[in-house]
Amino acid sequence: MHMNPIEDKVVMITGASSGIGEATARRLAQQGAKLVLAARRSERLSRLAAQLGGADRVLWDATDVTKPEALQQLAATARERFGHLDVLVNNAGIMPVSLIAQGRVDDWNRMIDVNIKGVLYGIHAVLGAMLERGVGHIINISSVAGLSVGPGGAVYSATKFAVRAISEGLRQECAGKVRVTSICPGLVASELPDSITVPAFRERAQKLFEGAMPADAVADAIVYALTQPEQVAVNEIVVRPLTQSF
Ligand SMILES: NC(=O)c1ccc[n+]([C@@H]2O[C@H](COP(=O)([O-])OP(=O)(O)OC[C@H]3O[C@@H](n4cnc5c(N)ncnc54)[C@H](OP(=O)(O)O)[C@@H]3O)[C@@H](O)[C@H]2O)c1
Image 1 (cartoon, helix red, strand yellow):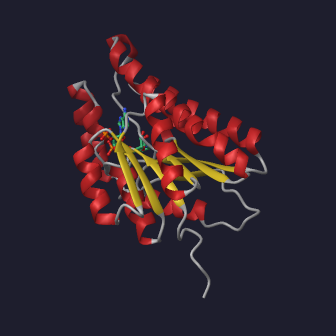
Image 2 (image 1 turned 120 degrees about the horizontal axis):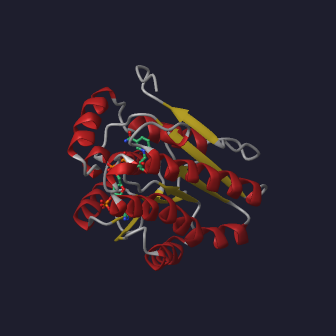
């Protein structure tokens, strides 16, 4: 019988405490991956970890992706426990959208810190060891907001365009060694609208998200990227609910 290529792969997922990250953890656990789960809410992570396997298969730690040392520490612990890291899913993100004129400077800074710097810090925590082994896979979650911009979404889109730019640069620099995939999901049912601080935008998003697809749709895209033949790298995936026009 052919072995599932995900079996025993060691996969670190940021933002694993809800939404896309949690769905991905569940899907990859079903396929036999060993998991390294990062997010800030430790009760969520410990509950999820307990459902997905013992300490020999699942490692988790309360980890803020805006703290580079925290990601370094988690990756180091993972390498100690499991020998190496095969895959990083850079998924943690927030979406506090607003008009630029509303001047929500704190929201801009948090988005830039989590969505851009957090992705870079994640890459930094795993890339050296991946290049040394000559094998690895980094999957960055961008968005359809990384392909186009709408009113209220300027800074969020800027962070998601940045994720695509970082992914493409990384792909070029690591060709032959590390696979790089960026995924641009459309509307996905998750807790993301809760991160919106301007009530009118939050209500609008909650309405839009009624047409969202399940987070499993993105987990399945990740499985597709992870299960290609040795010489194949899936670099970009866009996946929307059928009904989404933008
Ligand atoms: N939902 C959509 O429609 C959609 C569409 C396109 C792209 N995306 C992207 O998909 C990714 C996942 O979002 P989601 O939709 O699954 O939303 P979600 O349910 O709100 O999940 C976001 C995750 O990010 C984590 N997170 C936030 N700030 C963090 C920090 N400082 N350090 C560590 N973890 C942090 C959260 O965990 P803690 O709060 O426990 O830290 C949570 O696990 C994001 O990058 C988002 O931009 C979502």
